[in-house]
Image (tube, rainbow, N blue to C red; front, side):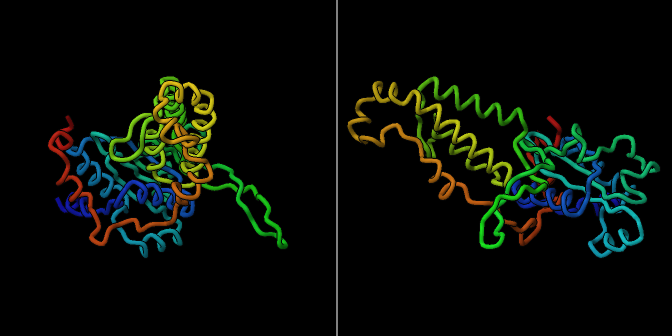
Length: 284
């Protein structure tokens, strides 16, 4: 019972962006590369957390983790976040004795390496990848693009291709749409993409989606104007236009900054489960 109680005190990130940023830091900077994970209904989550708390030091603080690392022992973290009608959970581990990469670990055979091509960590629509990108660097007074390797979140391939398909469907239907509380159509869908967690890789993909929409909508916009002459008369050259890409980048897609992972009063696993809807708690 004590183990269950203590496991329920584990902190949960304040929102999805904070959860993704935390995972990116832990896997990338802090080398928590080995993992096991899955999805469970709320009713089974406390038991799983207690089981891992019995097996591994997931309840210790940062000082203990640093000491364990110096002694060659692995550091482990147990992370949970709501995912649809269930909860996504991850047990992540650094290298070292007692960790998931240790052959004596109870979960060694199930563990995966986040660097593996078929073992990437995913969360909702997103996948954590070790990828290359170009960043501007000032060298001897000149700005050059330097290729660097880094961990970044991106939309999963099927999510990104699905987003493109929705854009194409709206364009085919000449569904120009609108933004705002009653958003719909192409403009509404693009606005929805801008509301994703704008971590570097995701932000780049959202820009790609806007460029795709801009190029394809330009081909059918004349047909839309013929179909809606009243808007052409009212708005002139702005009728049926999408936001220019530069305006989207500079005013609608702020670059991601590090945010506080936990709230002033941190959400805990126990609190999260206590407020889960009845159908989640029951696993239905």
